[in-house]
Length: 156
Image (cartoon, rainbow, N blue to C red; front, side, top):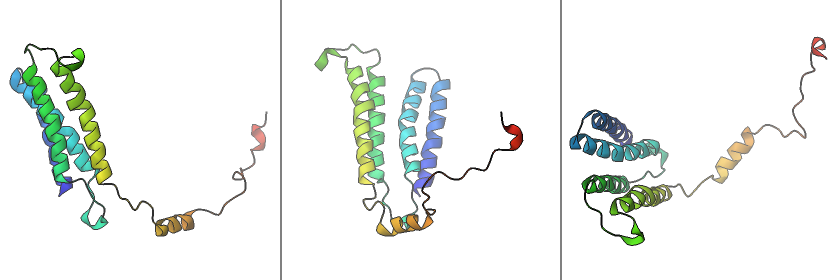
């Protein structure tokens, strides 16, 4: 299910970005912003898709929705602030700059890291996995592999 949703989000965001680039005016800017906010969420949904039989957790739909809300809200805030007078804010930076730095930069980074950690398989490699890898490993050799002798005609 998540794979189909991820493919749909990526395809929909690609259409929205293309429409935003080709459509002049404010409507195109909004389509571009929403498409650009949807693309990372669709890619995360595709990258973390695991079959139910794997038994490994995937990021919840709520976590992906929170990432999308943060990205889309920040992009919408930037569009809403376009052309508006900017007052003084902490650090002397305009509000749009704070939205760009925090809403599209730092906060999504923390949220995506949290989603990764929440969906991380704590088991890692089990003892059975390590034993299976040891059996597949070739017999240890003390040195580098033997190289075939060089052909006689190639000697300098």
